[in-house]
Amino acid sequence: MAKAKIYITFKDGVLEPQGKTVNAALVKMGYKNIKDVRIGKYIEMEIDGNNEKIKKEVDEICDKLLANPNIEKYDFEII
Amino acid sequence: MAKAKIYITFKDGVLEPQGKTVNAALVKMGYKNIKDVRIGKYIEMEIDGNNEKIKKEVDEICDKLLANPNIEKYDFEII
Image (cartoon, helix red, strand yellow):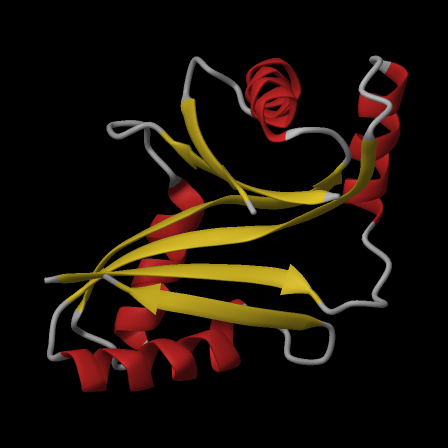
């Protein structure tokens, strides 16, 4: 059993209002050294199979279901 | 300028329906070897200051604003 850790974020240049709001809140709370915040998704998956197959599958799953390739990019690692 | 990568997930034992739904969808799509899916938040932060101060601040921010310590746990790295 392997674990896949998947990180999905908006592509650079895509406006991410949730992060902007958190950034503004933090600056208001006194954390004036915070320059940028971007919020994405973090997904952990328990998955059976050999490493090569898992890599292929996770890539496929990210592309088809988890990320919107028009505006999001993803990255993952298998551990 | 440093970058903080923050991972927020529900604590073990806390029901996470979004992940369960994705898991069921993936099994239905034919990925029968997916055993568990848990969805959390991934946050990237650009932050000024020295490493020690940044670590302390990010820990504080996670605890106060980003995570709900009753049901969520967090982890971060500074790069």
